[in-house]
Length: 284
Image 1: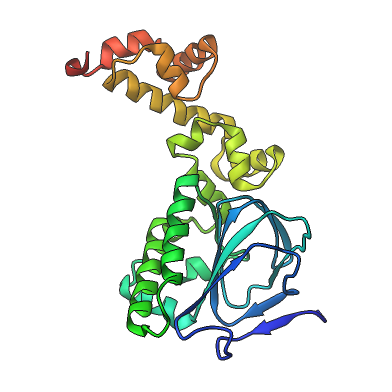
Image 2: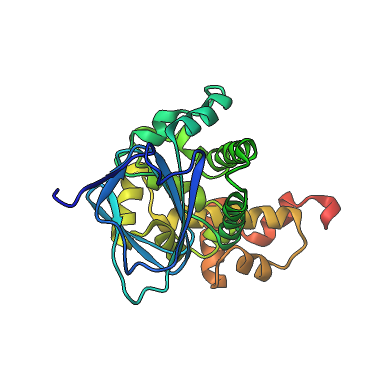
């Protein structure tokens, strides 16, 4: 690796607490490199091609990546790129302090051991919220060391507990990217958009996703999504007075006969009879 570069937090490249960097062009990027500090980056606009530990990742807007010490990575140069991302670097001791605060509840190994660094694709709302928090960190003068130190630790604890907490419960045999995807697809705004949203969040094609879901969850992506949609529809039937057509659309289905067919297969009755049997009286 003739072009492999090494960056250390012992240099002046990093401030005592952290370094915030906004990248708006990929015309000039470092060659493949690694460092002895942690780094997160959030894509705020456009798409980025990221090479990490020998693999190539296509990162869409809203991608949040947690780079560990010794991870070897670089970004593909693109003279015409309209992308932008925020990079935040901080020392290993800083993250350790955050873990110590969590009191052993969160496993550091879950973050460090996987071959590829943790990657989450955020919703637009989460992306904007996280960008705002990163911008707030950037606004703190580094001369205010105590304030910067406290703000960074609070931010990291929120990051771990709100976005990367799924790593702490990941089964050892399931790839982290898949476990995170499995969790993210359980959100209403994701499962209602279906397999297309799943592919977008994962960065994998349909064949790859099908093989992964079959191997680790013994189901297909479509069956998994339909199960989430049906449970959502069943709850609306029980706890709302919306029409069956409205509920079908809210759950992500667009074909009434298909909805009736798979609903009957799952619950052994029609949506109307299900509502009559299980609806909460006060809502009807």
